Length: 433
Ligand code: NAD
Image (cartoon, rainbow, N blue to C red; front, side, top):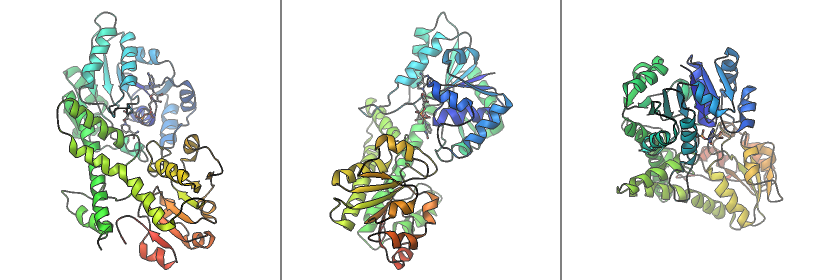
């Protein structure tokens, strides 16, 4: 059975190439024809480790193709994975207009039984809306099923996450749809968890919000560590040794960003409140997260007092390492604040500079640098915003020699305080002395 994947962004492109890797025949489609052209040539429009190779390999096999003809791709396929965006609207709810638009297009091209699979992250009950839209707009009574198969990949390790998932959640309401989806993911055996659709939709939002909660929790603890002699890294290590807690997502720092956690926690809060459920726990986690950048900028002020005309090196712009994605990145809020204060910023990121130039074009106050050393040249302070591995092995002695003042404000606890101070730096980090 041919599979169509609608939307070739971070999730859709990996899904299309990954499903082809599993041995299926896949046609990826997007309304952005330039993107499709580039992908068809074997180059991903995003930076994601291993994606170009996966793409090229499956394009060469001939089982993976791309087209800007969304209608044709739908008509050709028996299973349609919907991977369009579900950004946040002004109220904090998920903006479902892309999903609604695609549902209408599917209805208009429903030329036989198809399973429409929600892969985008959607609020619980979205499948009811998709069913309603398709029923309203289809011609005749061609049968179809809606299913939910939320995606758990992480940017930066999206390819390996997709190819080797911990679990595959499949929400269905018919045996026919269940059989088709179980067949698609056959190689994963009992890693496939079949539920009803509401449950599958909720598993995704509940998982992301729980992880966001965990990050806010350790950040709250890190604030307490700063008022005491406790060290948040050791607290997290000690906590993480307990298998009930686990060591993942216990890194204190600048909080969560990206295109998922900030919007998903708000979307779950809103959907819960719309249904009359008290969601204050999530609201508080989001509030804690929101304050992280202000706490960080305060530290920069504590180090430099007056920020006007200070030359500040900023290392890391992406919302996390190994991606070029800057959606909801802490760096944006920090840079905006420092520009307001009148600082001169010297920015460096291994992959995200082009995206950032669209937010902050180069100017006398915003200078893009070719490497960390150029950024640090004559700087009054150096800020670490994203924990790229290459920063961990930075030649700090050389950095110290070229800076005007040897001051590091580290938002990701990348360095060991004792050794950085031994080199002669004044060092500020998160939740530790
Ligand atoms: P994205 O913005 O990178 O990609 C969305 C793509 O959909 C774009 O290329 C856009 O052109 C295309 N599109 C929109 N409307 C269309 C239409 N009518 N027809 C054809 N194409 C259309 O988004 P993303 O980061 O890939 O996220 C997609 C979904 O997956 C979201 O719901 C997101 O929450 C979820 N998700 C994202 C991640 C992640 O790490 N990015 C992880 C898991 C789940």
